[in-house]
Amino acid sequence: MGRIFSGIQPSGELHLGNYLGAVKNWVKMQHEHECFICIVDYHAITQPYEADMLEARTMQMAVGLLAAGIDPKRTVLFVQSHVPEHTELAWVFTTVTPVGELERMTQFKDKSRRQESVLAGILNYPVLQAADVLLYRADLVPVGEDQEQHIELMREIARKWNTRYAEGFFPEPQAKLTKAGRILGLDGEAKMSKSLGNTVGMLDNPDEIWQRLRPAVTDPARVKKTDPGTPELCNIYSLHGHFSSITEVEHVAAQCKSAGWGCIDCKRLVADNIAREFEPIRKRAAELTADPGEVRDILGDGAERARVVARDTISGVRKSMGFAPALSSSHPIP
Ligand code: SF4
Image (cartoon, rainbow, N blue to C red; front, side, top):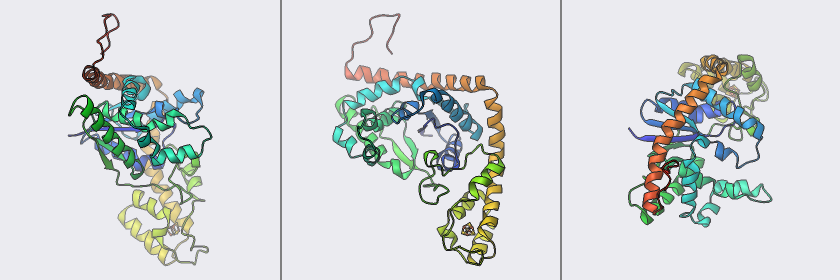
């Protein structure tokens, strides 16, 4: 039973891409592994954001995760900034990480290209990610392919620190690629993302789901209802693969190839299936939203459990690096 760490930004309500790409997998893995799931608010502030909305979005994210099936008895669910050891370890790691390694990260290049003045937080983002995972000495990190480079850097940081201070202290975490792969948005082009407005919200009601799916891009060859299509070229067909039965998927392919039905019929079926799968999640989310105290208690308990492990790691780090122990017993440093 390995230990897993995974993080998600407090972007508010979860969407279908988060669900298929990460959350559904976490719900399954919590029965097979020791899981730490973290709402990474320190990462969120590396991009422009609305400070007066951060708390609400953090709570919405927690509600979404719990409603989707993250079980706080099995998983340590917490907020990153509630465990200050994340930033302490990140600082330590900046002292063993070459700037050149950070500058060659694809995500850094993408983000910095779009900005006039590049902030150090964006450059150091992968260092904080390394601290997130290694603080819990996790073995496995479920990620999409776009994060593999960051996992490799994490391994390198662990190696460098271990070589310099304490051989074998940090494990070299392995990427656990998620089976769902890259979930495309309703535009059929870019990865599903809230900032691109190409998502279906997990807490949308059936009508909202239908309104989102109705204009979604399909196989461009199907201009008229009588034009046959190629389902493999259509993102709606991929969604059927996740939400419809095998018999329905076969039916969709046959109807598409023979122009036996129009895209609207096809979308209607998948919209109904999505709405059915999300229905219990939506109900549970409504209950949790009505009881924010329960959600805060869960996050508080999660942070306490996370800090037990985090303090132990930081204690080992401090000893290995030769820091002086705290002198005041009223303000002990772990
Ligand atoms: S019939 Fe379905 S699978 Fe075929 S192009 Fe239309 S929406 Fe896509």
